[in-house]
Image 1 (cartoon, rainbow, N blue to C red):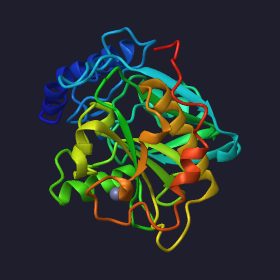
Image 2: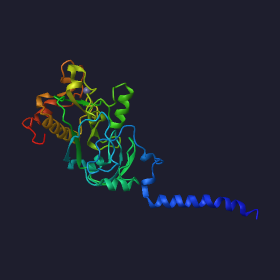
Image 3: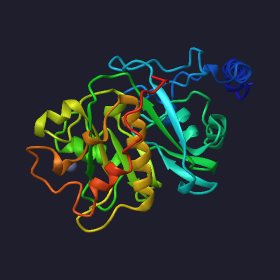
Image 4: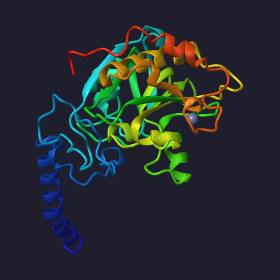
Length: 299
Ligand SMILES: [Zn+2]
C-alpha cells in the first residue's frame, strides 16, 4: 500500500500535463507566447517594412519614427550569379519579405527551411538558410522625401565589410544612429554578394546621414558607400554595375541631376580622397547622363 501512494499523488499532475500537451498540439503555434526560441524573440526595433500581403495580427507594427510606406523597386541583376543554397546573415532591419525578394525565393521556403513560424521576427546577425537562392534581384525602398537633392559616393576604406559590421563599428565611433551611409554596396566579403546592395537602418527610417559634414550634405544628400579601399584597389565590376543601377533608381525617383551626383572628395569643403583615387567619378556621371532626371510616372 505504501508504495502506491506516490503513484496516486502523481496521477492528477500527469493527467493535467497530458491534457496541456493535447491542448497545445490541438491549437498549434497559437500557444507559443513565451518566445523560448530566441529566433522568435521580437527585436528591439520592429522590422520594417511589413510584408504587404500580411494583414493578420501577426504583422509587426511600424516603428514610431518610420516614414510613410515606401515604393519598392526591384531590379533583375543576372550578373550576381545563379541558383545556389546559401546562408544569409540577417542585416539591420531586414525582413523575411525583403530577403525573399532579394534571392527570388518564397518567404514560406525561408520560414520552413529554418524551422520558423510564418511571420516570425528576425534577429540581426541571425543566420538563415536560403534554399535555391538566385540572388538576382536588388530590392530598394523609395520614400517620398524632398530632403534628397544630392547623392554622395564613398568608399569604406576597408577591404571587407557588410552593413551589420559597419553599423556596429560606426555605432562604436559615436555616430548618431550607427551606419552613417544610407546604402552599402558589398564586395563579396563577410558573407555578402559581390555587388549586393544593402539598405541601412538610416535609409529605412529616412534619417539624415552621417557621412559628409561639408556643405551641409548630411541633411541634403543620400550617402552610398562601396566596400573597399579604392586608393589601393578598384571597385569590382559588379559593384560598379550595382552603383549604376542604384544611382539611376534614386536619381530618377528624387529627380536628382547627374551634376548633383558627387564623390565625397568633390564636395566643397571636404578634405578627403574618398571614394579613393581609383574611382573615376566623371565616368560614373557620364554613365548617368541622358537618363536623368526622369519625371517618373510612378512618383
Ligand atoms: Zn567618404
